[in-house]
Each structure stands twice: as C-alpha cells, then as structure tokens.
Image (cartoon, rainbow, N blue to C red; front, side):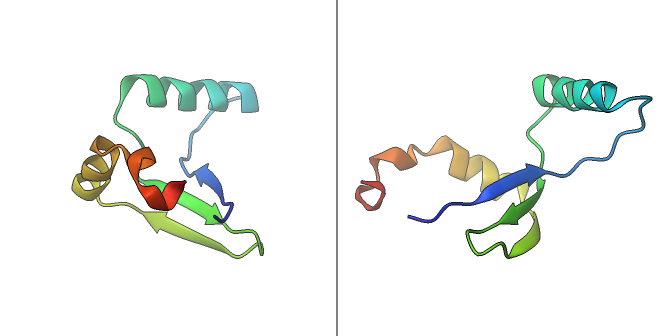
Amino acid sequence: MHKFTVVVMKEFEADTAEEAALLMYQELVKGPAPLQYSVTDEARHARDLTLDRAKADEFAAVDHTADPGNW
C-alpha cells in the first residue's frame, strides 16, 4: 500500500491564517465535501485532482475496508 498526502484546495479571503482555517472548518461542517484536492505521493510527485461528485458519493457509500485487497 502506498502513502499519499492529500490537501484540500480552497481559497478564502481572510484577515489572518487562523480566520482562513476557521472558514475552511465552517465549510467542511456545513457543506458538502470538497471536490478539489492536491495529492502528493511518496516520491513527492504532486498533481491536482477534481472529483466527480456522483462518483465520489458512490465511492463513499461503499465500505472499502471489507475489500480483501486492503488487508
């Protein structure tokens, strides 16, 4: 299994970094999950991804921990 660092990409206008983080937290709590991400692999290759909402919701509805490939 590989390791990835996933960063949510969302731009906010704020007076401080803390306020921007709080605005992000508010978005995560109140709204749907974000669809734009930056993903970096173990070799530090980065790419930006935008997920399809319907496919992402379908994936999220399945318990992927039951997949023998995850054991």
